[in-house]
Image (cartoon, rainbow, N blue to C red; front, side, top):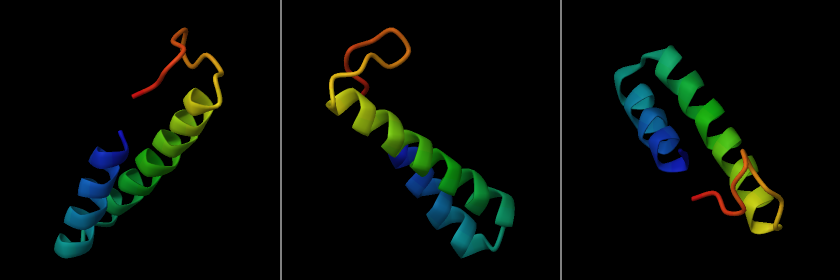
Length: 51
């Protein structure tokens, strides 16, 4: 999710499409939150680890 967000950020920045930029930011933030929660040992969406 984080990698997809970064890809969308780059594509949105290069093409000037603001919706891709916005979606990319959202995906990076949500992916980082899920990654931190999974690393702390909290179950995320029923799974102990989130990749």
